[in-house]
Amino acid sequence: MGKALIAGNWKMNGLAAQAEALALAVREGAAEVRDRAEILICPPATVLAMVARAMRGGPVMVGGQDCHMKGEGAHTGDISAEMLKDAGASHVIVGHSERRTDHGETNAMVMGKARMAMNFELRPILCIGETLAEREQGRAREVVQDQMSNSIPDGFEEAGGIVAYEPVWAIGTGRTASEDEIAEMHSFIRSLLGSRRMASVPILYGGSVKPANARAILALPEVGGALVGGASLVAADFLAIAAAAP
Ligand code: 13P
Image 1 (cartoon, rainbow, N blue to C red):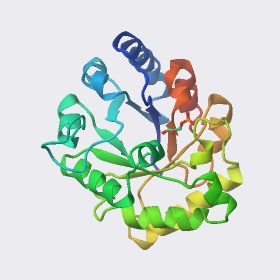
Image 2 (spheres, rainbow, N blue to C red; image 1 turned 90 degrees about the vertical axis):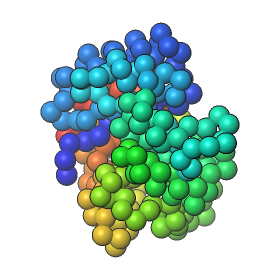
Image 3 (tube, rainbow, N blue to C red; image 1 turned 135 degrees about the horizontal axis):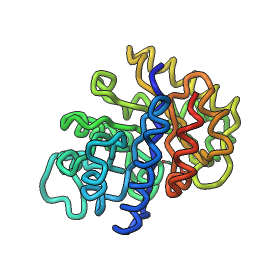
Image 4 (cartoon, helix red, strand yellow; image 1 turned 60 degrees about the vertical axis):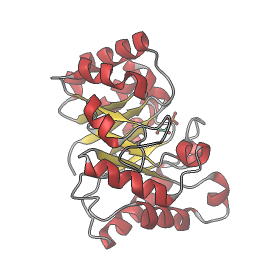
């Protein structure tokens, strides 16, 4: 496995001044963790171009949080993959559970978004994960398998695609999945990727990753990095997570 990817999903947080200060603080500390982790920040679209300009020439990469499945046209309020590329993004998160829930995104839509990202040479970070009810019903694997087969497009590996396993019940709840739960699901995801000849696709874990649990999580087999929400809004915490990469 290569270096860990530590990705910060800022979600709907960050006015211009605050976003710039946070990005600059991440850039400042990124040099120190460079040999163990690649660092990506995904700010809101309104500040993405500004943040990307501020990160230019440094080790911190910038990504979008979503893109549309169509290339352009009459889609008020939406953002295309090409726009993100144009604004300086290298990656884009697609299929985050908050998008699936808040915007009714289906696996088919998520696949369309990933395809569009790939068309514009953005690396998709495709999120999958079961809800608490699904886990309690013993359906976690079934749900993950369904999301994987129906949202990951062919050519994903060649395009630098990344999978993020984010159990919905661990997002923003402070309740991290146990090491056994993470290891078990990552190994299952690895086997599913293998059966599609996508064995080298990195698998990130997301859901209440913090400095206190990062070392143990990042050391698990088949965990190629972390997708961090809340803790990515505090530069010191985000950098401490990166520094915990093996
Ligand atoms: P938290 O780290 O706040 O739980 O969020 C995880 C997440 O959804 C990242 O995409």
